[in-house]
Image (tube, rainbow, N blue to C red; front, top):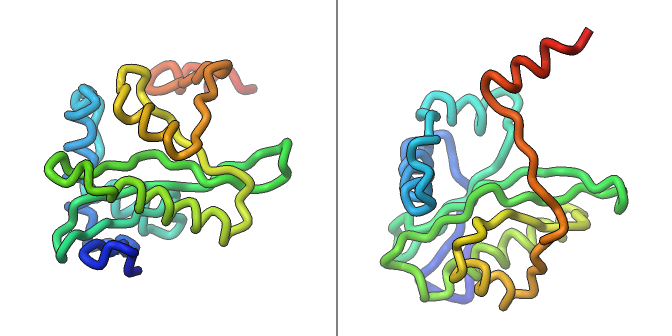
Length: 166
């Protein structure tokens, strides 16, 4: 899909993009100081994103034909609205391409996607130390949900919890 920036296009990822998607994920993890948490590989991404039951979708942003950004998103659901939402898991723009408005274009594309799919919300998380991102998101009208605490159960704790189901 062409954008207002004639040099920047957004396209849906294909299974052949999985090595590129892994590269973006790894770069993002390094930026977020979470590289030690990346355990996925190309095969896992192929199965999770393009297998029989895809769990998420990915779009690639290309500047003059070079992949410089990606976004991975999926649907959640708001019981209060009674509608699906679009949840942005990851958005990443390569450092040398930041400040050119590409992140805003990617978010606008996803907002348009959310509206076209009848979603009542478009949401994402941001690390509390990432002030540039927080300020950027606020400038777009995003409201931090400070009154909510994220909870997560993974690994052994997830297995232990599941084992309590009788």
